[in-house]
Image 1: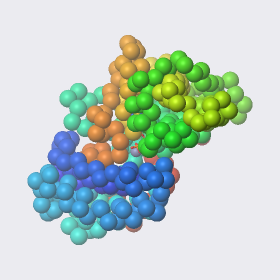
Image 2: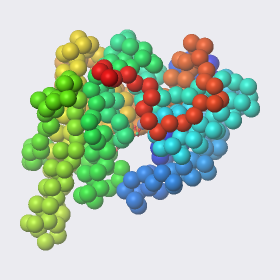
Image 3: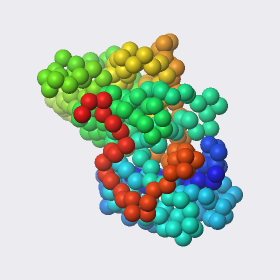
Image 4: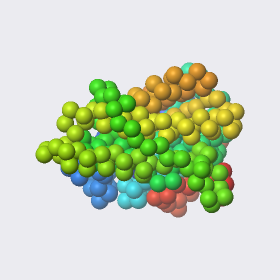
Length: 347
Ligand code: KG4
Ligand code: ZN
């Protein structure tokens, strides 16, 4: 089934065609250079650029796939979560395309799509259930995945998302934008033991009666790394870490990864599930990949780098699964900035 997937939840304007689980095309037009000046995504700019680009991006996805619009059999689109104005551009384009051609329209959850990405084109796709490690700029969660649309959150961040922590640290230090990839690159030539940053211990502070074993937090680490910048400012007239910048990047990255892994290993112990599928932009992180590869007891599956960040193929891929099951969304379906698809282990 030829399924067109559209993704405009944040700053990537993306469209792809998937057929029978195979990617026929995958076009991602990034707005990164247009937001770099502000060191973060400016929602108004994002939605305006999606409006300007969406037609051309979809046209290219169809021509790369060698398809005419009339050969598309279903349209899937990210409907939540994300920036509302940006989501609405893709959502309305998809609805109009589906309505004009009389084909089914599927509203997809962005986080489910990230978790689905590693199955696309995989020779040996993981059996359900598996553990999902969802790590992006807006969300971080450790989940039990029983099916492509049946996900239970076992642990999540109680404050900042892991990608957000990378982006904010890079912003404060002036390392560059977006922070994740920059810090990852700098860390290659840094000493990860040079600075000791704190690991949060939520397990001991679960005064609300809930079990926080697999939850995690990034605000303490972020604050500690930013406070270190104050120390540099006091000591050096230039106020920058200078030659120690790569050590800061490596030490921060190592701690950020350890925080995730502690929750993940606890989830593996609790559930007895030993297959882990990663998804989201931070899944491209080299330290996370190498630390997980060292862990002999778990089978770790990462999507290829082009499917880690936001893309239309993951949306088309999961959309095809809904269609194969006979599902379709009403054209009255609307966008939402919030996560809708996950259940929490406790209310
Ligand atoms: O999934 P994604 O493309 O967009 C969201 O849904 O948020 O993830 C973007 C996030 C950003 O915070 C970016 O800094 C981070 O992924 N990221 C990385 C790396 N590449 C992208 N973080 C750490 N290491 C990387 N190599
Ligand atoms: Zn994403």
